[in-house]
Amino acid sequence: MASKVLTIIPARYDSSRFPGKPLADILGRPMIQRVVERALEIVDRAVVATDSPLIYEAVQSFGGEVVMTGTHHRSGTERCIEAFELIGQGEELVLNLQGDEPFIQREQIASLLAAFEDEAIDIATLAEALPSDTPDAVLHNPNMVKLVRSTSGEALYFSRSVIPHLRGVESELCRHHRYYRHIGLYAFRSRVLPQLKNLSASPLEVAESLEQLRWLEAGMHIGTRETTTATIGIDTPEDLERAIDYIRREGLYSDEGKVQV
Image 1 (cartoon, helix red, strand yellow):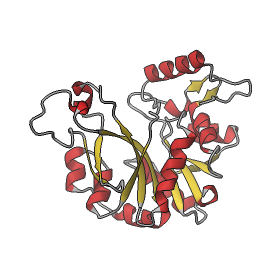
Image 2: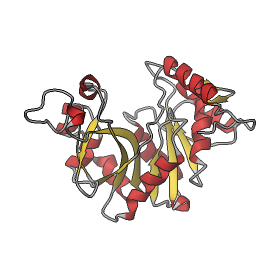
Image 3: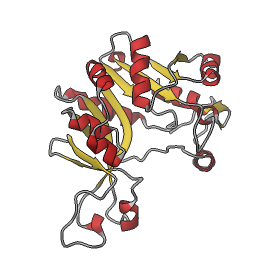
């Protein structure tokens, strides 16, 4: 499977909450290097896609593969599509790995790619079952995207609202139903990328501000695989400090410079 996969890591320098985030230092190495190294543990090829000369030069400096893309992209998916058009070599699958996930687990990537064993699946993503003691306030947080799945694991819908609504249940919702949190890691069959490129924003996407609803409305099949390991995303400088504290506390920094997670 690995030889048929191209991992593309979209990386922007200009972030409102954390400018220059891909170049932030994580115990001696820039974050983007940590992400590239993690990807190459399971796939043969990982390419950073950026519109920033600073990130481009940084990736080249540590020997990584990088491609310059346009500045007009509204999402990481759009940047991935352009990158595949520029440097793809006929890979069957494209993994969109976020540039702020330096601790993504090997098992999560393997599980995501395994979803394509079902030939009907066009796009794959991950879901995490919420613990039964999850507070209602956490479940209702619109920044946590929820999803519902079919018995085969296909996504039926994604929402910032609590789905499904439990009729007659007003509190401790997770004790009464198995809710899923969406983890925004995607993989695509490369053959669907031209169709994705030409899709316009859909009504459901506009309503929820969730790109994946555009794909569902277009009739695409999104497979979801369950993971029991939460990712450690880094959105702010405070997140970075917590991540570094976690590495040091758990003794995850090896003599060779790799984070052992």
